[in-house]
Length: 388
Image (cartoon, rainbow, N blue to C red; front, side, top):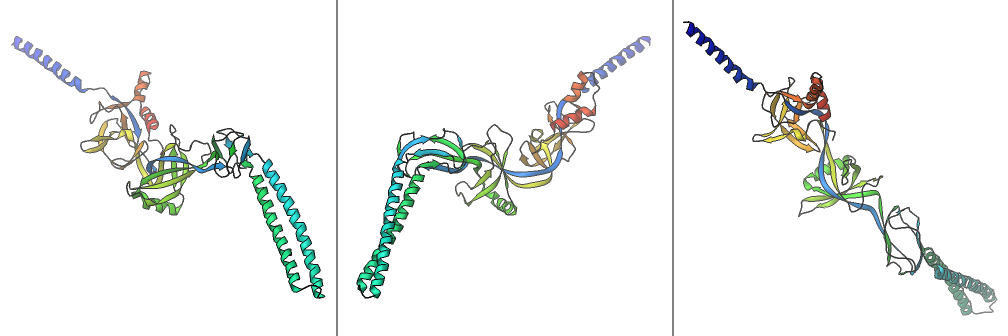
């Protein structure tokens, strides 16, 4: 009986060890994760597109007279001001034309005065019946002919002065000068040879296309006020803000797209003609939208879902419905509410009911500080959905 009692005690000890060994694997360490808070705010609805930047105005500067270019007052690529001197065409031949026209005018004025005097003298002689009616009419015709010659010479003088003024070519607008096509001492032909091209870049335009299904929305909001347009230059995450200023009068039957045009102040010259930019057209605003970071949303066999961290820091799967993507955030229509916490990173080791710990809490433990909910709150604040 003593032997039986000893064996029973040994077996009981062995079974107890087995139970402890079976229980030890279930005590898993917390899974390190990153989290973000679900937020709620008004969120705009955008139509995204790719646009092309075009100058607000483009002017090919040409000479209005034929002559030799003798001076140039700018360098290629200079920013020009309206009225700034650009070129001078040799004015000497045109000054001579002005003097010639002035002399002709003076001569015709003298002739007219003489013809007028003769006519008035013949009027007196006709009243005394010293000259015939025909002679008086001839004097009147001669006087009127001289008067019309004066008017003609005045017009010729004005034309000569205009041509002299055209020898001094100024910038017609504020803008950027491009390639210069002629050098000094070249002969240019009137209204034919291009001297330089100027592009107005402040303000500037962006042309882009959106699907025709947005037409009614665009027209509706355009009638209520200005429709906002954002353009993102290459490598720049800060948008340039402008307004919709043109909507084409036809939808392209091949692509189903409608062409639009936005105008931007471009005060910092970040937009440049010919550049391709990402464009966002603001269509409407969703009030009190529920937002989560896009990186928190996963796709599964049953649809989209997120990992949610409870108040006792345990993980759970939550099915969600995503209305649309808005930059780096998703607009959630079902499954979440503001203030909840979603897991954004570290999900490979997760399972329903898993104990989780934020990386901030782990860092505090390494430094010898007790882990607290404040660490989770700090992490959520750093990882909350960014403003759209």
